[in-house]
Length: 250
Image 1 (cartoon, rainbow, N blue to C red):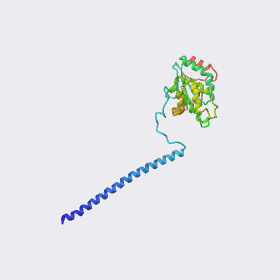
Image 2: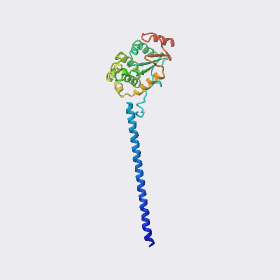
Image 3: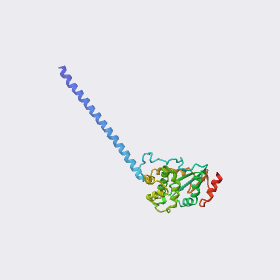
Image 4: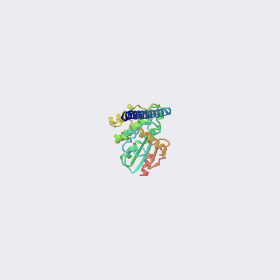
């Protein structure tokens, strides 16, 4: 009699325990599903906000996207030469005044680098992207020069001068990637280096360097030229005055 009474009671307890376990499983499943829904909602909200701002969600930084060319300074300069006088030049490859400066002074600068007189710091900027009909010519050429500095540094000055020799008009579409590569190989840049321009390896570095130049480097336009850290205020567009300033500084 007592045994028969305990059996139904035991069965009842087991049933209640099983029901409790089922309830807990449902709660866990609901919690997981709820977390998935919340994550999805947050992602959707982030997408809508970015889309409304007209941009793309920022990609996590990678070694490639944040790379600087070998030997570049922390302020965004490509360095050629090891002389005692430092000549710093901020330029944009679409800037017509930079073209005038280059055509007047490139011969003297190459000679002074070869003679061991100057340390030449080139800052290729990209603030004139807005003036190339959406082709981002300034960024593409600055990236190309940075690529040469990274992989074929002895050809930087020759390539830079060649770009200015064939400089397109400001306000036009600029030169194609294929034409930029052809100018590079014509200046002695190895073919495989020129072919890698389209990898855009240094475009983020160019953008960062351009921002630094205007926000912290005191640059308000191009060309900006400094001799041993002091702005050169002589004639930028005639051969001779810059070389004379370097000689005086030496």
